[in-house]
Structure formats: structure tokens, C-alpha cells
Image (cartoon, rainbow, N blue to C red; front, side, top):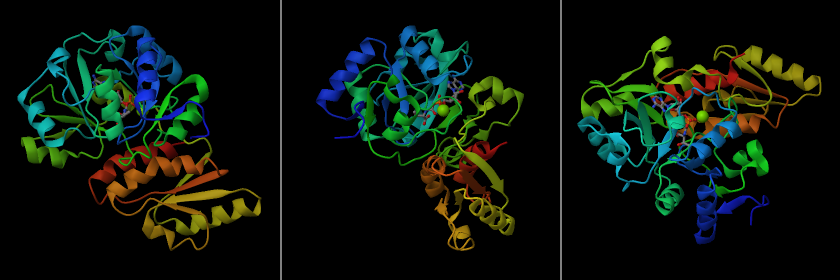
Length: 330
Ligand code: TXA
Ligand code: MG
């Protein structure tokens, strides 16, 4: 039994409760392999509106829709051969694809775009929920807008408390950063949001793929990239990898003032800061993705979170760095 009354294990009883909430257009929290989502019936404008209200999400930022692997996508979007190949290679998994929409979900999901982003998650619990409900579930990450995305049911509770009456607990999300968002409506697939499925991996399956360039066109295509994101609720300061002396000086000054601080850094930095409090992100991109949001949320227990920048020596680190730098942006 969890200490919070609205956190439920996934079982027949809680699935029934979820169905009742979904039919009443009340959003619920649920686990996926990337981060936790705040879900509601994508056909219902009232339900989708409620997601935006709960999150305080900017009105022009579209939502992605979650379905189980057997759901007939032809009901929602126009399919194409590239998307089909990529589904066979990567789904269920942390890849969201943007298709031409058939316009059957609530117009509040796509926010004026003629496309619809669909995600088939891999998490066992998420699949159970999606199969039981058998509806397209619109779901952004289950955090208040701008805050760090949640990777546990308790993180969802921290942001919403009893405002979200049902939060499914499926353990800590292992992926740790949001899915890759890939536009498959054109000739060449374009990565709009970096994630665990990289452009190189996609290229191996369909021959071509590129990253969208930051700037105006990306903002139009994927409005979410424009907003500040992932901010932990504490003081933050970022140090370059060659500024460890400065970091140590800053940390020790804080401690002498009676303040607490946590250092968030790659494993190889840990040995260089002595006995000071550290949260290691590990060394490879996947481990760093798995630990990033958990570490940012841990940092909220301290007066200061001090980040150390890292080299982009594997492709998954592009996605990790994108979030890391936004979390530490002034
Ligand atoms: O891993 C994930 O994707 C998580 C879990 C819960 O599935 N969800 C998630 O949702 O990260 P959200 O709303 O936080 O991010 C969705 C991103 C936003 O950047 C949004 O702008 C973009 O996807 N997006 C949604 N629909 C789009 C569309 N039709 N075209 C382009 N970008 C779209
Ligand atoms: Mg989000």
C-alpha cells in the first residue's frame, strides 16, 4: 500500500476505476518506459482541455496520442511505408511518429496542425492500461508545465497531489527521457525531439534521417521545443567540465553558509570532488538518460543543484544534453 491515497498498483480494480474516470473526462497518471504521462480520452475535447488546465500548458503546444500495438492506426492517421518499417523496427518503444491526421481526435490535441503524433509505448503496465481502455489516450508528460518530467508515481503526486485522483504506479521509468519525436510526413524522416532512438538508428532502417535544425522552422513544426523546460525547483548553477576547481570553491562556500548542495555530474567527475554530495549520471548515454530526471528531482531536496557539463561522445547524449542544458538555463 502506497502512502498516497491516489497512487494505485495496476490491477483489475484500478483499471476499472481508470475507465470510470476516462468516461468522465478526468485525466489520470500512468507509467511509460520514458517518463510518466497524464492521460485522457483523445476523442473528448473536455478531457483534453482538462489536461492543458492541469499542466498549465501553453495553448499552442500539441499533445501526442498513445495507443496499444493492436490499435488500428488507419482510424486516426494516413499511414506510409517509411512509418510502417519504423514501427516494425522500433515499436512498441520510445519513438513517437508524426503522421498526416485524419482529424478524428479532438482538435484540441493537434492545436491547429494537420498532423497527429502517435506513440506506442513499451512499458508493460502502460500496455495493460491502453489495451483495457482501447482508446487513443492523449498524454503529455505528467508534470506541471516547465517543471522536470516525472519518472516515478511519487513525482506525479509531487506536482498534482489530489488534483489527479488516480496515478498508476509502474515503478521507475527506465528510459528516463521523453520519446524521440520523428516527423514521417515528408520524404526524409526528421527528428523533432531527440531521444533514445537516434537518427543513426533510424537511418539503418530506412536509409535517411536528419535532425531538425533549431530555429524558426522547428518551432513551427514542434511547438514544444520553444518553451523553457525541465526546471528543478531549487537554485541551479552550471559549471563547465574544466571548471571543477570553481565548482569545489562554490560548493564549499555554500556549505560554510549553512546551505546544502548536490552535484549532478558524469561518473568520471565524481572522483574529483572528494566527499562532497554527488549524484552520478553514469557514463554512457542510456544510463545518463535513465538517471537525469531522477537526479534533477533529487536536487530539489537541496538548496543548490550544481551541474557539470559533459562531452557529446555518444548520440544518445545529444538528447540528454538538450534537457540537461535547459534544466540549468538561467
Ligand atoms: O515519452 C514521451 O513522449 C512522453 C510519454 C508520457 O509518452 N510524453 C511526452 O509528451 O513527452 P509531451 O507533451 O511532454 O511532449 C510531446 C512533444 C512536444 O514537444 C510537442 O510539441 C510535440 O511532441 N508534438 C506533439 N504533437 C505534434 C505534432 N503533431 N507535430 C509535431 N510535434 C508534435
Ligand atoms: Mg513534457
